Image (cartoon, rainbow, N blue to C red; front, top):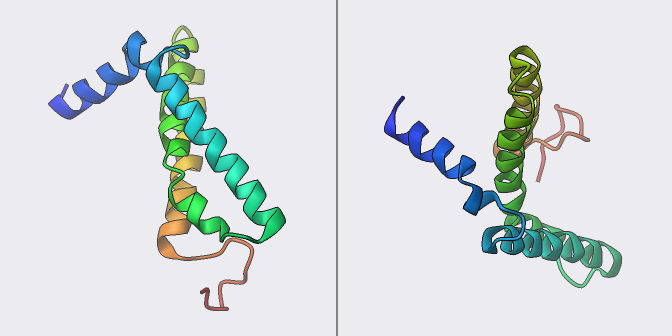
Length: 115
């Protein structure tokens, strides 16, 4: 196992880091709440562009990664199901990032330029 994988998996499996009552859990929940409320208020009022909140919504992929590790641990006894579920959710998470990175709007036709 390479050093990057060892550090990444070790950090995600460390109970102190993923404990919902710990500092990291409280910090990520607060960050997520600010992102969700900010997007809602920005959409409802028009006082601020929604993309400013979404731009700093790094909490979403961080929580998704922690969730994938927890899902893997919960399904560890059923290896095939664990691989399928974690793989499908990981691909879905990466697909969202790929769509944003390439600049395509999933609700617009591919022939129409975005932006």
